[in-house]
Length: 92
Image (cartoon, rainbow, N blue to C red; front, side, top):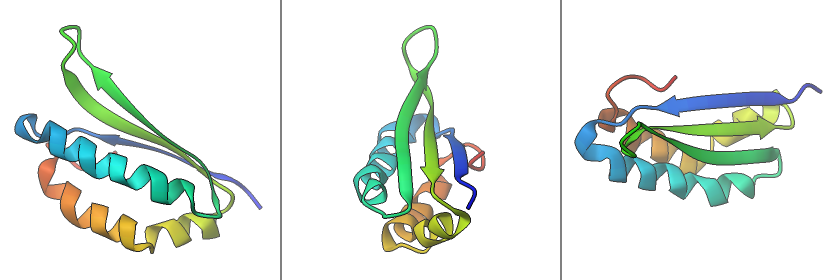
């Protein structure tokens, strides 16, 4: 089986940075507990003035089935339903 690597980037609307961060951070613990997840790390990117400009998730799953399982969990569906409207552009 091939491992699946995901690098997701989030660009929050200026007044939604805190809310986006909270939604993403709420995903870390339940995702790390999934049997098929190997890595689920959160990063934030700041500009030269120290202001947050984006968030990133680096994810590794044991297989495509593990990623499919992740995308069908309640925590994933809940996060997706909340986050899209808080972003300046689609998740990359």
